[in-house]
Amino acid sequence: MKTFNIALLAGDGTGKEVTDEAVKVLKAIGNKYSYDFNFQPALIGGCAYDEYNTPLPDVTLDIAKKSDAVLLGAVGDWKYDTLAPEVRPERALLGIRKELNLFANLRPATVYPELTSLSPLKEEFVSGTDIMIVRELTGDVYFGTPKGIEIKNGEKFGYNNMCYFESEIKRIAHVAFKVAMQRNKKLCSVDKSNVLDVSRLWREVVTEVSKEYPAVELSYMYVDNAAMQIIRNPKQFDVLLTGNIFGDILSDEASMLSGSLGLLPSASLSDTKLAMYEPIHGSAPDLKGKDVVNPIATILSAAMMLKYSFNMDEEHDAIVNAVRKTLKDGYRTQDIMQKGMNAVSCSEMGNIVKDNILSV
Ligand code: IPM
Ligand code: MG
Image 1 (cartoon, rainbow, N blue to C red):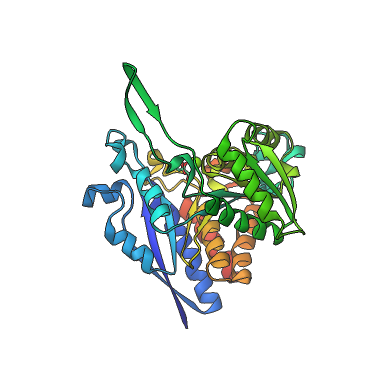
Image 2 (cartoon, rainbow, N blue to C red):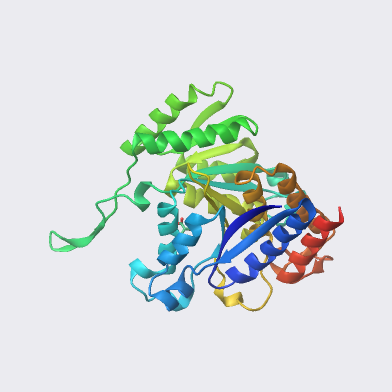
């Protein structure tokens, strides 16, 4: 039997609750299709700081680097809000992305037909929306130097540097074009090239790369317009290509089309085989231990792992279909509860999805 080693980084808050359910589901896939998933837990975020004085200990990085794929829950808790910026839980996320070279972040924003009425937007605008955001994840103003806060002209002055190497733009553009080739072959590249030099380079390089993908229809949009168009007419988009900060902002916005942050998974890919999968939501520390959060985003992240890390399309579809059947049958965690539906806990939701995998 083939064995896959998964680094299991549950993190803080409700991270453990949601990853527990994804593990259940992966084990069900293992049973059904005869694979062995071997999970190696490691600490990341605030819990790692408590134990090792750093949110991203070397042992965790080591386990991640030696694994076939990383499954992450979420990091952060208010009790770490007063820590120095370098050791805050969020730093662990940035650190692991950089250390594992996870430069390509795929964030699907899919509106499930069972849940269109949950969206804060009118159903007719959102129904059928299926956007894939391809966000660059290891560059931009997040990592640019120089940066800091200092005294200048007698007052405090804070600065970061928005910057990209041509090679960084090229490699994320290739990922986005390849993703578009497997979807509806439409790619919209987001920038602010009417103002920013770094965006002018972005547009130039994306245009250059597009010559290798003549089948993909490429368009460009300024980020402010993109923010508006995502609300006005989300169905116009297939794949959106963005830099790190624009993708951070637009992916939160796009997630709301589906009605709940608790539904959306993500994949962070490198140019080696190693990749990391995590829900796009945070750690919800106020809900910790209550067994109420929605595990679907993490379960769907595990599905993305099967597809992108292990090329298991059928197994990926088995999870997605099991989730859809669960929603169709009316099971709802509190974040997606609707009148007349069956309220279930986080662990019940995981069990039902697991049963649906095993029963079909
Ligand atoms: C995200 C988050 C992170 C980011 C934070 C927690 C560092 O918002 O994954 O979108 O800004 O990338
Ligand atoms: Mg974000």
